[in-house]
Length: 239
Image (cartoon, rainbow, N blue to C red; front, side):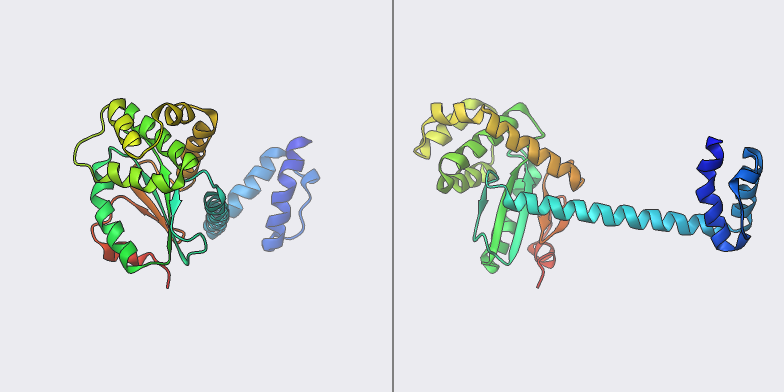
């Protein structure tokens, strides 16, 4: 009896498409399958229509989830940022401090920010290349939690250096040059709050299909990879 109930909805649907009144209780499983099979064979557009509706619903669901994720990113005060909070434009960057492409993109970003003053820039620490990348990201988030005014200098220094970051001593030197206490920053960087922030950033990356660096979300639109000109970046900024 269960299979008849299972197919009852399908039969009602077929009836609404012009097959006349049907009753699941009057058919065997084999008969029901034959009816559905024959109808689909004779009306293949039904499958296309169904697939289109499924695709549309999935796209709408993904859009809703991405919009919610964007609001979550904007609202998360643990995520480093610069610029006015009520800015017209918002640029999100997923980056790794040892990513060469991220560093190549940075001058273009800076030129864009010179032209567009009304931008809030959000730095999503997304270490994927090495263990020291992870430590640098942890330290960055810890610095932002300790002294927001020092974060941008930390980020700019690492993103404009020609040499790869290879060890903790380099991080310690940079943190101390910023006038911060290395022992305190290191302890905070290894704590649960920083770990939770990085986990959330990784979850945001999944929602936007970001699996490499750099990646940008510019006024809600995703740009994967390093842009080759500031014109490309500016084309994503909504008027």
